[in-house]
Length: 406
Picture 1 (cartoon, one colour):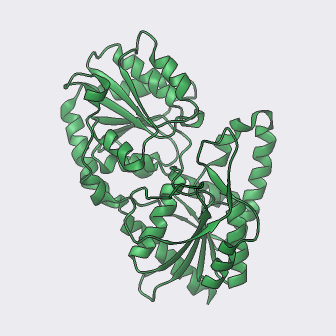
Picture 2 (spheres, helix red, strand yellow):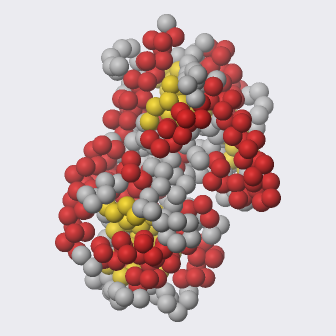
Picture 3 (cartoon, helix red, strand yellow):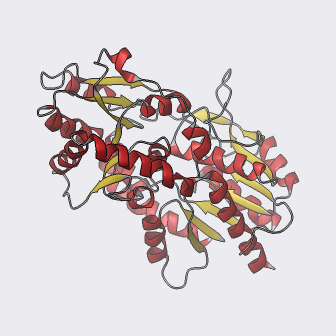
């Protein structure tokens, strides 16, 4: 397929949006601004921020998207502050979306906004595209004893939603394969792997923030960083235990934890134990660009999350020149090239990940020449993540759907 053709009118529906920062909201903004930069007409339909808050930007390059704000509410705990979702009600935003007469409707969630998107797609006679950003089953622990039955009901619901789409976009190849397998041979929608793009040139020129002075660390400390939401599904406790093993052997190594979330109190308590005291620095939740600048001031990145669809934070780390040490999991191999710009730790059974992760981390802490070579490899190969490349692929999918419709 080619991207040649007239500009398209694309309505994007988000279940959440900025200023709340997550992989989904970052991806949604990147899609909207990227399509605008490619001269397509975009209407972004998203929940209105809280009174007095502006959406701002997570750093995507492109024109401000035209917004249709849905009435919204703050989700109660354990959802984080600022996480707002739309009310399932008629609204002026939905009337505006209908008047927009989209050629493509692109849902970022299968829930309230996804159902709104599906209704608009049917009304407009437009193909419905759905990006499956989240492995929802990995969050069932928040439901307590209802987790397992809730997961079964959710799985059935998702399969019905998928079959109403013209195409399903998975940010990672492993997730795309899982969706295809679950749909079976008689599936109607196309299933494509299109990772979220990032602004590679902007990240390469981002000034780093040295974490050593703020943390009171020596100027020659080797700083390992981890970046993202501090929540059980991200397994940051495994990072701490792996780091503790390395810190016992390597006096000059330190750990920077960038982010916030429900696990922060427990993680801080662990970091206050005698084997880690003074060796771990928490930055708290930061704006996206600030968080990346803090990460860029480190020497390498570590990740123990096994719940990703793409591993967007890994791509961002590579684009700022950080070698990555990561547990193997969904999306990891789509970003990290093992032995070239990072190390992928494979074959670790649940509960036993810290030791192998520590061994990989220790090998890079002790080998500055290899770290330097991997940093160069990360920068040299980061063009594959560029937002313009991903947008071009997405537009090709849109045009394919329109051709099939005709």
